[in-house]
Image (cartoon, rainbow, N blue to C red; front, side, top):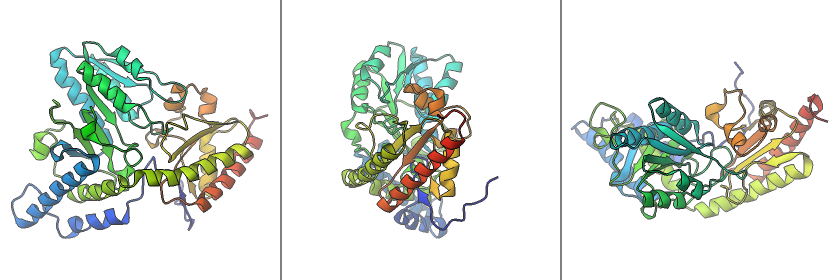
Length: 393
C-alpha cells in the first residue's frame, strides 16, 4: 500500500469525488454525537430532542430544495437512493405490466448496475446515447417511451465531465406520457438552482459527502403522490418507507451543508469559472494535443475534464500527487477498474485517448495561486510522461 502523503500543503481539486466537511456542518453535528445521542424513536427527553432535530433538518432541506418536508426521505448515500428509486418503482409497476426502463449510457455506476440487475430479472432497459458534447437529446428519450415503460432515470449533471442535462424538458415529456421520472442530482446540488415544486420530477437523489457533509448520509426526494414501496424491511422509520435508526448527527450536518451549498449559487459558480477558464487556457497554450471532454457551455463551472494524447492518466495522477495535488481521472467509484471511462467512450473518445484523461473539480475555496501551481505541475508531468512514452512522437 502507498503511504500517507505527509506534505504540509495539499491542493485538493477532486471535489466531484468527495468534499471536506464544512466547519458549520461539523459544529452542528457535535451535540448529537456527544450529548444529544438519543434514539429518535424512543420516548424520553433526549430522544425527543433527537426527533426534533431530524424533523427540523427535514424542513430546512425542503426549504433549500423548494419541496415539501414530507417529500424528503433520509438514506445512507445516493447509491441507496438510486437503487431505492429505480428498483422499488420498477418492481411495483411490474404488477401493472410495465417492465421497461429508460436511462442513458453514461450514468453513474449505481444507476447503470442497478438497471443491469433488473435486466436479469426480466426487465427491458433502453440506454439512450449522448452526443459528442456529452448531452442527451430529450427527443431520444421520448422515442424510447412506450406503454410498457415504468421509469426514466437520467442524471442531472454528469459526474465525470460535468455536463448539464435538459432535465426540465425530459421530466415534462415523462409527465405528459404518464411515466415516472428519476434523476441522480448528486453533482447538480450547489451548482444548479433546484426548485422541485416547479419541476415534474418524481424522485431525486442527493449524497451528503459531495456537498461538504459527511459520508454515509443521503436523500431521496419522492414527490407527493408518487407510488413507491419500501427498500429496507424493519422498523417504521421514514413513514414506513426506509427502515433503520436515523443517523441524527449526519442528518443535521447534511441539513446545514445543503442549506449553505444552495445559497448564492450564481455568485460562487462565477468565481469558480474564472479559475477553471484560466486553468484551461494555460494548459491549452502550453500543451499540444489536449482535448476538452464535453460541452464547456452546458457544464457546471467546477468541472474540467481533459485528455492528453500519448500519456496514461494514472501515471499523471501519481506525478501530480507527488506535487501535493489531488485530482482524478474519472469517477471514484470506478477507480480500481483498468477499463477506460465508460463516460468518455460514450462521447466518442478512442480508448487510448480516454485512458489519458484528467478530471479537475474545483470549489469556491480554491485560489488562483493553487491553479497556477496545478498548471505548472501538469505541464511538467505531461512533458515528462511523453518523453517516456513509446507511442508519443
